Image (cartoon, rainbow, N blue to C red):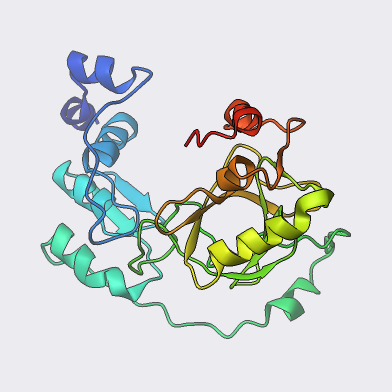
Length: 262
């Protein structure tokens, strides 16, 4: 109705700001949920694409921010959340007396149901993840557990001056390092002495894997000793000049001069 449209109308300032190419507003503290976002985000979207009295659907309810924004803008809302642990957070945020419905788990044998379909797609290439996200997070937070800023590992095996195996059985290749057969024995001895009993952490560059599928990294001791650089500084390996990486020029310069550089 005309009345509803009038109540839902954006001001000229809102129209210019909301439909502008880029939005800038403060973020939200990630203290109660993995992916908290400020109310301003759903508020703008709801005002742009719905009318007063409409029902907003949030298929990933999370902490309830979208439902709160809908409520404050005189819209109804329906949200779905599979994690029961977030229910107290949702109730606290939305307040009022929201209707909570728990869906009973259905016993569905999906493999059997799939066989009933007229066409079943089968991928001829069986592809699995290269890295278990529980083993290596690349800085991401994928669950609600508390994690340190750096994830520390120990070295289980030293395969060569370029490749080591971590305690989670992950094989990694040291970026920018090229073994020298004449002194590989000394390089292995050096790595054994440096890494034995020590905690290490990884940093990454643009290229994540080598041609053999090994994860490529910069290896650091917990005290921030840069293992890749120390191999070159001590003339125990060559800088891989054929590879493009962040420290390429510094590694090559270090190889020529023997200076620390880091």
